Image (cartoon, rainbow, N blue to C red; front, side, top):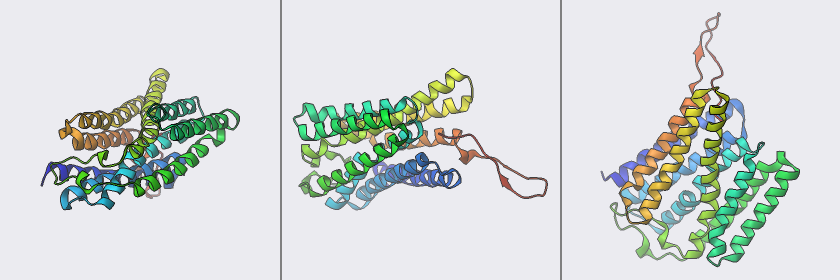
Length: 289
């Protein structure tokens, strides 16, 4: 089996396991960021799954469109949104707004002013919510993200895509070059916002635990999460410059490193003890953010 088939399969399988563990954590604690992270990891699993299916059985236009919508747009966006829910009550909310502004700049400077200015308008509205109603901020970001995802879905599934742009075999790495520029310019809005939020949120948390000199394992956990989020960014950039050999390796390493970081910190490492009456009782582990 080609590595370009086997590696996406492993990434997909691991992502679904990861999503299941985070969902189990949500069932016990009912924190919104856990539910959003579950959705993000489901997107990751589905995206890698489309890469496996395309490499193993051949690409078609429907599979290609789903890969782009979920993998290129939704994965980073919703993982970052989970971090926004976790840290929005502090000053991190302003970093999230700044990430959205950064994501709008490619559209502004590429001449897609309607898209860029709309994103900047959303950023202004989110800033007003963060200033006047901080408790509503993460929910407002979620509403903006869902609306943006629906818009992206309409654009992705209505855009013309030549069949010749699809990978011909498993030796070719899938990319978004088959879509027109007005589709590809959407991705920075989601990837920059979500990616920066995920990475900066992990770095922010690691710095907090380092300064407080408490819960050293959580500092290590957040360092790993930041590194895991950054690895696919690097290999994705290398792929754009023609060095495609590391693309699927980076995807797998990214989810694996984030998974290890989650396990170090999260309640999935909760211990089990035997109380006096011999009943098995789950005890609370470290909070995984």
